[in-house]
Length: 351
Image (cartoon, rainbow, N blue to C red; front, top):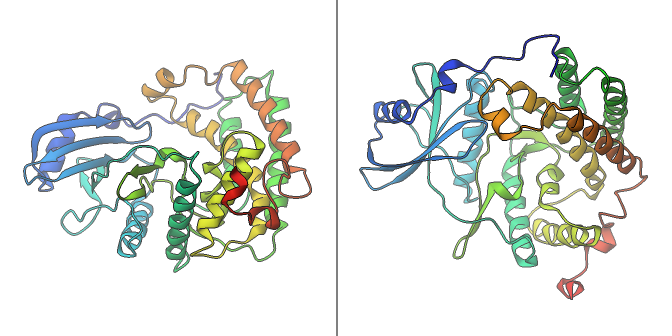
C-alpha cells in the first residue's frame, strides 16, 4: 500500500506481550495460575485462558492500547454486569481490587470466568428462536439507560471516519481511488438517507458485534454471549442481522425465527428492517479501515495477506456497488427480508 501518512505504529510493548508478562500481571492482581494456560485466538486483543490455584478457570483479556479509553472500557464492563444481574447469560468481568479494569506496566486487562461451548446450530429454528429471546432480554436491559462514552452506530458517521482514514493514509491504490471513493460516497449518502427515513428511531445499548462466533452454545444451558468489546449505541436490528446467512429464502426464515423469539420479550420496530443493508455496508467500509489501522501489527499481514492489494480494492468496489443497489430498493429487500405478514408464520412453514 502506498501511503500519504504513516499508519499508526503498534505499541511495542503490546506487540511483544508474552504469556510470562500476562501471568505476572495476573498474579499481581491476586490471581495465581496453577501452570495450565492457553493463549486464545484474538486479533484485536491478547487473550489468555488459565486455570487458577483456587480451582477457577479464567480468561484474561489484555486490551489493544489506544483503541478505547478507560471510560469506554468501564462502561462496557458495567453493561455486562447489568446483563448478568438480569440473568442474561454473558461473561461479565470480575472485580480486581476496586475495579474491573486493571493497569500493569502500561497494559490494561480484565478477567472473566471461562464460559465454554460450541457455535450455535443456526440451521435449527428452535436455536434461532432461543437466541432471539435472549437478544430481546439483552435489549430490555440496554434500553434502561444510555451509554455516555461508547461509539454510536446510528448514522453514516463511522463510515465517514473510515473513509477519511483510508484516504488520508493513501491506503487505496491511486488507480482505484476514484472508483472506490465514488461508490463509498454514494453508499454513505444512502446510509444517511436510510436512517433519516425512520423518524423517531429508537437506539439503545447493544452487543454491537453479535455474529455467530460471539455466541456459544451448551446442551444444557443453551446460548450465551461473549465479547462485548464492540458494544455500541444503535438500533436493535444491529444485533440481529449478522445472524442471517445463506440464500434469500434461508435468510427470510432465519429472521422470522429470531423475531419470533425476540418479540415474546421485547418490542421490535419493523421499520428497522430497512437498515439491514445500510448497516452491512457500514460494516464493510469500517472493516477496511480496521485492517489498515492495524497493518503494523505483525499478526495482520500474516492473517490477511490479500489486504491492500489491487484485487482487494477492486473487489471492494464491486461489492459496495452491489450494496448500493440493495440500499436503493424502496422497501426492506423483498428478496431477502420479509414484511410484517411474512414474519408471522409458524414453524410449519419450514417444512
